[in-house]
Amino acid sequence: MSAMNRTTDDLRDRGRTPPDQSRLCIHTATTRPLPLEAAVDEYVRAGVRGITVWRDALAGRSARAAGDRIRRAGLEVVSLCRGGFFVNADEEERIVAIEENRSAVREAAELGAPLVVLVCGADPAVPLPLAREQIRTGIEAVLPLASQLGVKLAIEPLHPMYADTRSAITDLATANRMCEEIDSPALGVAVDVYHLWFDPSLETEIERAGERVLAFHVCDWRTPTRDLLTDRGLMGEGCIDIPAIRGWVEAAGFDGFIEVEIFSTEYWALEQRSYIERIVGAYEAHV
Ligand code: ZN
Image (cartoon, rainbow, N blue to C red; front, side):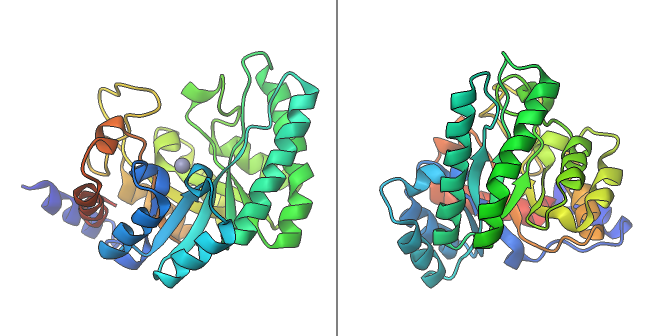
């Protein structure tokens, strides 16, 4: 039985259908070698409908003009990546981080992105419980501007292997608890299968998040994983049951874009047009 048939059977078993291609979004970081303008053109050529813009892709450009160009090409801006990194042993640095996040929110508003995704931060010199307090303080400092500009913030829990330097929030339960405590309509969560696939509480926590699920990121977990940051797999190459997790976020009410976010030195080295075609194929067969 081919992989394609197996996936189709799995989907039928669950009583669900494959995702509509109109929901496919690609992160600019996935096709990092392409400048923003080329990425937009190539996504459109491949039939992709959404784009999540990483801030480095905007370097030297007007966010407003970039957003206009993206929309004229027929793409929807799904989110801006990324804000966060609120945690620091140095108080001055924490203030700088909050200002940087306010800049990200203004940039998102100019770009026309409805969402800023937060990689919340960690510092090996800061104990995790204190780090989470710093994250909460940072988010609460940025939320008023976000609300004013109509931009939402999504806490993206990261895999615990990044708890030293990238995020003290390493599970959806902690992100949900923080959302409930802060209780702002402008705050939710991003569910990334790479960071959460192994969590036995995932289905329950997605259900708990409900309408707070603001983003859904997909890729796959390779065995072996050769690099902790830049060896993510295409959907179907690894062990993550992406259709199951998609079913859970959809059951929670999420019907937004399905965002392909793959950091891979292997794939960045490929010719990007054919790589994007592979992404589309993997989306159709394994999401
Ligand atoms: Zn992600």
